[in-house]
Amino acid sequence: MLVVICRLSVTLVFAATLFGCASTGQFPGAATEGVPGGIVKSTGGTAGSFFSGLSPLGTSKDVRIFRVNGVKVNGMGATSLVRLAPGTQQIEASCSFTIEGRLIQGNGSISVNVVDGHIYQLDAKPPCVVSVSDITAR
Image 1 (cartoon, rainbow, N blue to C red):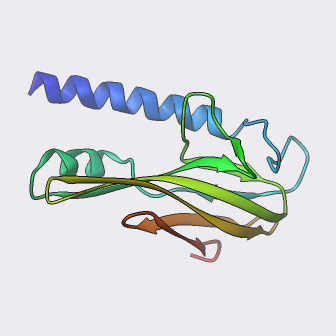
Image 2 (tube, rainbow, N blue to C red):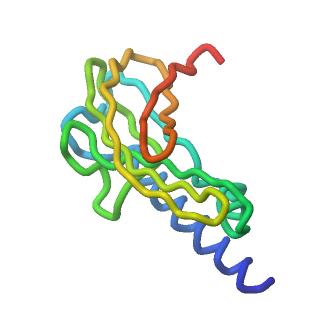
Protein backbone atom coordinates (compact mmCIF):
# COMPACT_ATOMS: atom_id res chain seq x y z
CA MET A 1 0.00 0.00 0.00
CA LEU A 2 2.84 2.38 0.88
CA VAL A 3 4.49 1.70 -2.48
CA VAL A 4 1.26 2.58 -4.33
CA ILE A 5 0.90 5.80 -2.31
CA CYS A 6 4.53 6.76 -3.01
CA ARG A 7 4.10 6.05 -6.73
CA LEU A 8 0.92 8.13 -6.78
CA SER A 9 2.68 11.01 -5.00
CA VAL A 10 5.56 10.96 -7.48
CA THR A 11 3.11 10.77 -10.39
CA LEU A 12 1.07 13.73 -9.11
CA VAL A 13 4.18 15.86 -8.50
CA PHE A 14 5.46 15.02 -12.00
CA ALA A 15 2.06 15.83 -13.54
CA ALA A 16 1.92 19.16 -11.69
CA THR A 17 5.39 20.02 -12.97
CA LEU A 18 4.40 19.23 -16.55
CA PHE A 19 1.16 21.23 -16.20
CA GLY A 20 3.12 24.28 -15.03
CA CYS A 21 5.60 24.02 -17.90
CA ALA A 22 2.95 23.45 -20.53
CA SER A 23 1.27 26.83 -20.35
CA THR A 24 4.54 28.76 -20.72
CA GLY A 25 6.12 26.84 -23.61
CA GLN A 26 8.19 28.83 -26.09
CA PHE A 27 7.73 27.06 -29.41
CA PRO A 28 6.37 28.10 -32.82
CA GLY A 29 2.61 28.50 -32.51
CA ALA A 30 2.55 29.10 -28.75
CA ALA A 31 0.34 31.95 -27.56
CA THR A 32 2.28 34.43 -25.46
CA GLU A 33 1.19 36.97 -22.83
CA GLY A 34 -1.33 39.40 -24.30
CA VAL A 35 -1.80 37.39 -27.51
CA PRO A 36 -5.19 35.74 -28.12
CA GLY A 37 -5.21 31.98 -28.20
CA GLY A 38 -6.96 28.70 -27.64
CA ILE A 39 -6.20 25.79 -25.33
CA VAL A 40 -5.52 22.22 -26.44
CA LYS A 41 -5.57 19.61 -23.70
CA SER A 42 -4.90 15.91 -23.90
CA THR A 43 -6.65 12.81 -22.60
CA GLY A 44 -5.56 10.49 -19.82
CA GLY A 45 -2.81 10.64 -17.29
CA THR A 46 -5.25 10.84 -14.40
CA ALA A 47 -5.09 8.83 -11.18
CA GLY A 48 -7.90 6.67 -12.58
CA SER A 49 -5.86 5.80 -15.65
CA PHE A 50 -2.81 5.15 -13.45
CA PHE A 51 -4.66 2.66 -11.23
CA SER A 52 -6.48 0.92 -14.09
CA GLY A 53 -3.10 0.40 -15.77
CA LEU A 54 -1.89 -1.57 -12.73
CA SER A 55 -4.52 -4.24 -13.23
CA PRO A 56 -3.95 -6.90 -15.90
CA LEU A 57 -7.63 -6.58 -16.88
CA GLY A 58 -7.61 -2.77 -16.74
CA THR A 59 -7.69 -0.40 -19.66
CA SER A 60 -5.95 2.95 -19.56
CA LYS A 61 -5.05 5.64 -22.03
CA ASP A 62 -2.49 8.43 -21.92
CA VAL A 63 -2.36 10.81 -24.90
CA ARG A 64 0.18 13.64 -24.57
CA ILE A 65 1.10 16.60 -26.73
CA PHE A 66 4.69 16.01 -27.83
CA ARG A 67 5.36 18.53 -30.61
CA VAL A 68 3.66 21.56 -32.12
CA ASN A 69 4.70 22.55 -35.64
CA GLY A 70 7.62 20.10 -35.43
CA VAL A 71 9.11 21.48 -32.19
CA LYS A 72 9.02 19.72 -28.79
CA VAL A 73 6.75 21.56 -26.40
CA ASN A 74 8.54 20.52 -23.23
CA GLY A 75 12.20 19.72 -22.61
CA MET A 76 11.22 16.97 -20.15
CA GLY A 77 8.91 15.17 -22.57
CA ALA A 78 5.29 15.41 -23.59
CA THR A 79 2.69 17.57 -21.86
CA SER A 80 -1.06 17.59 -21.29
CA LEU A 81 -1.88 21.25 -22.04
CA VAL A 82 -0.75 23.94 -24.48
CA ARG A 83 -2.02 27.42 -25.25
CA LEU A 84 -1.75 28.10 -28.98
CA ALA A 85 -2.08 31.20 -31.14
CA PRO A 86 -5.06 31.29 -33.53
CA GLY A 87 -4.53 29.61 -36.91
CA THR A 88 -3.63 26.17 -38.18
CA GLN A 89 -1.29 24.28 -35.85
CA GLN A 90 0.19 20.82 -36.45
CA ILE A 91 0.15 18.74 -33.25
CA GLU A 92 2.07 15.49 -32.77
CA ALA A 93 0.88 13.26 -29.94
CA SER A 94 2.56 10.51 -27.98
CA CYS A 95 0.15 7.71 -27.05
CA SER A 96 0.29 4.90 -24.49
CA PHE A 97 -2.53 2.40 -24.05
CA THR A 98 -2.73 -0.46 -21.59
CA ILE A 99 -5.36 -2.90 -22.76
CA GLU A 100 -5.82 -6.13 -20.83
CA GLY A 101 -2.26 -5.90 -19.53
CA ARG A 102 -0.68 -5.22 -22.94
CA LEU A 103 1.14 -1.92 -23.52
CA ILE A 104 0.61 -0.25 -26.89
CA GLN A 105 2.63 2.89 -27.70
CA GLY A 106 2.77 5.09 -30.76
CA ASN A 107 2.82 8.57 -32.23
CA GLY A 108 0.26 10.34 -34.37
CA SER A 109 -0.49 13.83 -35.59
CA ILE A 110 -3.36 16.10 -36.49
CA SER A 111 -3.83 19.58 -37.85
CA VAL A 112 -5.96 21.87 -35.65
CA ASN A 113 -7.47 25.20 -36.68
CA VAL A 114 -7.23 27.07 -33.36
CA VAL A 115 -9.80 29.81 -32.71
CA ASP A 116 -9.31 32.45 -30.02
CA GLY A 117 -10.99 31.54 -26.73
CA HIS A 118 -11.79 27.95 -27.72
CA ILE A 119 -10.84 24.81 -25.81
CA TYR A 120 -9.95 21.62 -27.68
CA GLN A 121 -9.75 18.05 -26.41
CA LEU A 122 -7.10 15.83 -28.00
CA ASP A 123 -7.86 12.10 -27.99
CA ALA A 124 -6.64 8.95 -29.76
CA LYS A 125 -7.44 5.32 -30.45
CA PRO A 126 -4.82 2.53 -30.64
CA PRO A 127 -2.22 2.48 -32.01
CA CYS A 128 -2.27 6.33 -32.06
CA VAL A 129 -5.00 7.58 -34.38
CA VAL A 130 -5.39 11.16 -33.14
CA SER A 131 -8.63 13.17 -33.10
CA VAL A 132 -9.62 16.55 -31.71
CA SER A 133 -12.93 17.98 -30.49
CA ASP A 134 -13.91 21.57 -29.80
CA ILE A 135 -15.31 21.37 -26.25
CA THR A 136 -15.78 25.12 -25.71
CA ALA A 137 -19.58 24.98 -25.45
CA ARG A 138 -19.69 21.99 -23.06
